[in-house]
Image (cartoon, rainbow, N blue to C red; front, side):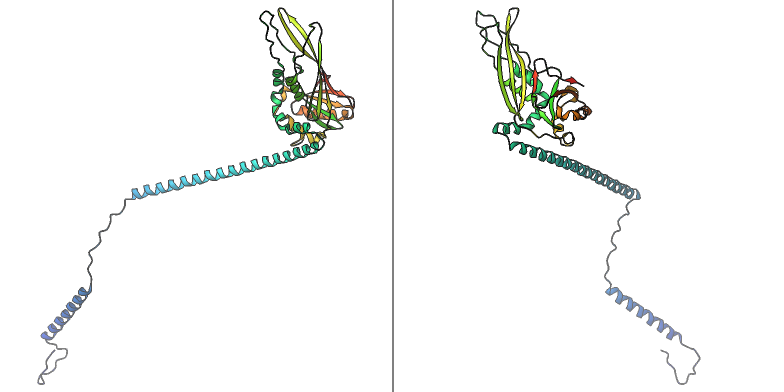
Amino acid sequence: MRRVDESDEEMPGGDSFLDITANIVGILVLLVVVVGVRAGRHVFFPDAPVADAEPLDSLQARLNDQVRQVRAEQSDILALRDKVLAAEDEALRRDAMRQSGVLYVTKLRAELDEARESLDKGDQRSLTTHNEIAQAKLTLDRLTREQIALASVEPAPDAEPVEVAPTPIVDGKADQTISFRLQKGRLVYVPVNEIELELAKKIEIPAITDPTRSVVTHETLGPVEGFVGEAEIGWSVRAAGSRIGIRPQLGKLLLREVTPLRGESPDEAFGPGGYVGSRLELLEAEKVVVRLIVYADSFDKAPEVGKRFRERGFRVAQSLKANGALIGFSSDGHQAVTQ
């Protein structure tokens, strides 16, 4: 500080050089002390190394990869969605088919149960084979001809060989036939093929003592689906050169209905799951002739029924019967006209 003598005169604003220097030094000392205190309290950390920035091209490539991955996942999601929709459609279709099958089976079982109430045990067994018979329709005629073949007769050492070549007892007017009866306005399946097949399995060669005379045998067949067959077969010895054979000839075959079957009206029979559809669905229409046996009380419905068969691609042969007449066939064939 400035020292002032009483004897000195005060000069306005007059500080000595030493006073100014002392003030500056004091300020500097104070700054040094403050900086030192702060430096002592500050913890020094070396600067962390800074990583180099990733190049822009690399970032763009990574972004493109992520975009492609997202698009691929979206495509997979869309494909899975399409598969789920297709599976749902298939499930709906199969459920509809299952319901239709359940309806048909229920309807068929109701009809069979109604028929079983008046059947004996033999007829009940025949009705339980209804579905197997329907599946065998496609090959029934071929099996009939194969089963009718008789075993060859073994010749004695000094005897002439005997050839057994039976004449087929089924009609040959078509590759395959299937028969229906139209009576009282209702259709019923007539098991002609099944009865012929049973005849082919059951037939036996009779003993012939006089080669110049024919032998007649009778066979009773069935019951099959409510019908019994009565067959008359003629046997004769035929010679061709040095070969001799025993040949059967079907004289007549009569079908008698022992268990009346209800059948169905034309609208029911040709409708979904109906009586006719279940019989014809496995057949090739161009190879099959429908044999329609029409009784007098249903003459007026015959044109409509025949038309419905032809609409399905089948040829129709009609046989007209008086009420009460039996269904019969002879070696000359049935009386029918193919339309």
